[in-house]
Length: 160
Image (cartoon, rainbow, N blue to C red; front, side):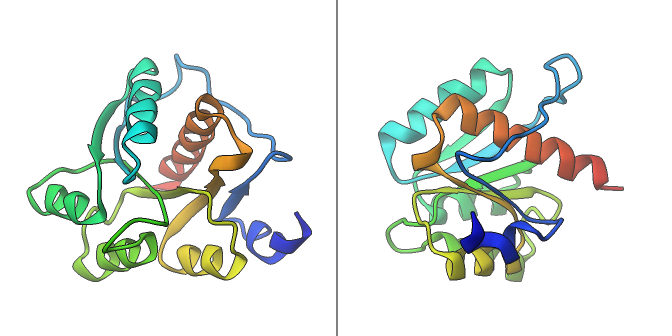
């Protein structure tokens, strides 16, 4: 993890990989969140949809950043936004930038779930408001969902 030392050591940004340990919150303590899940891969999107719903969460699943932006502009108000970095037309960084400039879901916790293992891109995601960056290749979906929820719990507990 030394390649990510500067990113991972920042308190507001957490990089999870196969070496990371999280403190999970028990299901009885966990709030019920609405998650906006943005990924162009239908198989992965459907699989994560099931995993989030198994944990009692509401999910808005979008196959593109453009679809997610429309949902937010139409009034959807998720507590958590999970996004992929590599998507056609509008990629993850552009999506994060759009959220910031249009002030869409300003209090939502933004978490990247991607196979892009590129430290400069991770740093840019952090600058655009990502609370965490989880590498898909390093986690199984159920573990990724737990890590996402731990990040959300931690970030939302800090919120006023």
